[in-house]
Image 1 (cartoon, helix red, strand yellow):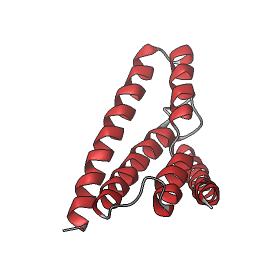
Image 2: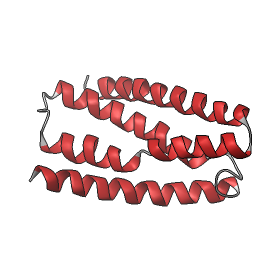
Image 3: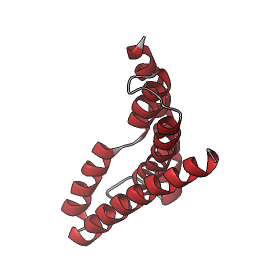
Length: 130
């Protein structure tokens, strides 16, 4: 059953990433490395936010490490939704085609927003459980 939870969450997360990512990149005017990988940045930041909220809520509710909700949402959905490997590829592509400066901007913004997203998500999760 655990495999089913992870598979279902991953499928939904992957479809959400593909849908939102395509829409955002069209708004940005094209695909990386021709334009900044805004879709990857936004998806990593929002995925971090969601994971932060889930981490707090599950910890407060005593969710087991292999509990169904953790497997479905944290491991499955967030794992299928976030795009760290795409972030890495986008960064190397930017480095090779647009220069180190833009690549470093991508790294700094992605890591900074990812950490900020988890912190914000944890604050939201804690506030929701008060």
